[in-house]
Length: 359
Image 1 (spheres, rainbow, N blue to C red):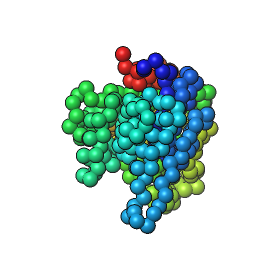
Image 2: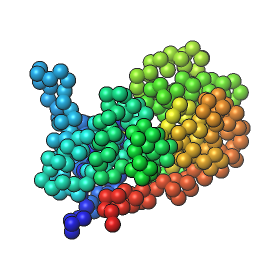
Image 3: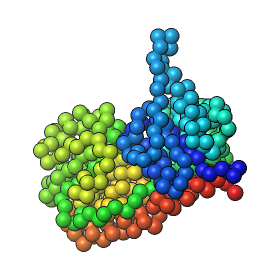
């Protein structure tokens, strides 16, 4: 890249979600490889450790109807590019990060390459809004490279934004293989959710209640969000409130993951599912609706068990896991092997570097 060492500015949402986790972990991996890295967001992401963080500050003035945060983000990106002499700005999540990255790249002293990674709701949620759709399409068309975290999401994005088939490359999320849990010794079911409608967390509670009718089980519920109170009320209605531990958001959920026999994913759609991948990294099997990109992460019988799009299809799978310790152990080992073979940090970081530094 013009004889310069690699410098990367990452932009991501300030959240506990998969896009912030991946951006943070990617930044740490690039820094460990000797790259100059800075991450830009409104708040420091929970997973960020050694990478320098630049906080976006968007002052509120009475003249503005709303705070022009995208302009502030673009300015912060330009400052970060100049600070680390970046060759690349990598925007995780399309809006507002992709548009801010393109604008910030134009402001910088030397224009860097702009890469955009699509994570899910920036395509099927925010990106589908009529007033945003044209802006997303334009930003993806102007970026130097666009990636999606799964083939499923790539297909949705190509259709939604009428892009050519070669416009998007697939680079999956990644995690590390962690210290192995002993899931066969546990009777705890795990659910991780941002408590939004797409996760169908009430359906996870209902599946847990049906499981308890036939087996000894507790539920570990990790996460928070707009439906949290309604979900807690539903647990009380189902009579499982006392057997459910509502834990809230966790920056590092590994300790709780290791307490579980299985993770249940009841989502209506998942572009990938970082929760599933991280459970697999700990050797905890996943029981999930076979929607979106989930079958690309969890192969049925290899890392977990998949139902169809209905949460009710998970009932017999949970019953099987609660009655077969050997199967739980076998799925846990295959989950760790799949993470090691397909979703490890070195492989995915190398794929991103190839996009950053095309031949």
